[in-house]
Length: 262
Figure 1 (cartoon, rainbow, N blue to C red):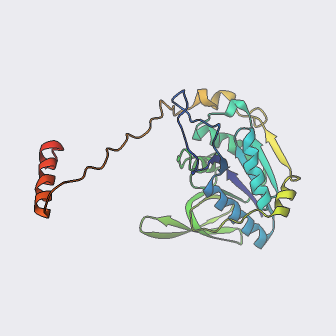
Figure 2: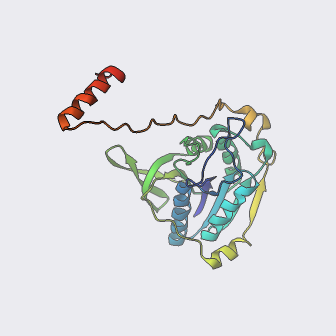
Figure 3: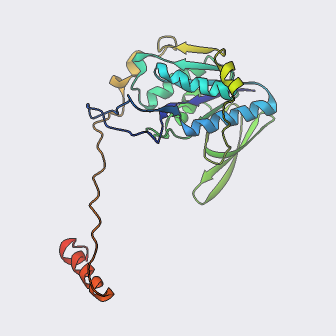
């Protein structure tokens, strides 16, 4: 079985994220970059399916040169090869353009199954995987926390409000991962050493045959106007009083006369 996993490099959620001077981006100098946590689940699930049924696992990502580190992480976990869409012309692409580039790369790859995290923790768009499936003309199953693949079919348990629904579909298909699906493995030292020798193919926008006028920051359908920090919370105000009744009376007075909610 040939499996392709879509991954993204994102800022570590424990890093201090600061707004850049341009007001529409973040400062990247001191940020630690990691594989998107939901994509880790996707890599692990692909490896488990490969171990059970045989086949290959290919890692596909879009990003700047440093994004190859995320590919190498997945290769160290056990994936076989990587494809890195790396082109300044693609930087700043929105979700639709990113999906278009990923789909263009997928069209040249053999695959039975595509797996991706259901969202990336940086922009939280929930859009790329669904758009890739649409471009590829294959079904997509989202928010999956259990998977069974057999006899050319995939059966997924997906999270819905208040419960779980079971969905079955023929392959090829794309599904997105949810927490609870698995526990991603750590890369072993031998795995890290082997990853250095595994192939990573670098693609440009031109290589993929995608119109450069449809990707990149200048051609975003959704424009970022500004980043703003949330307003600072006011300091806690302690209600003074000798007895509980006095404190209650003072609180009612504040709510009525100052805050004006009663």
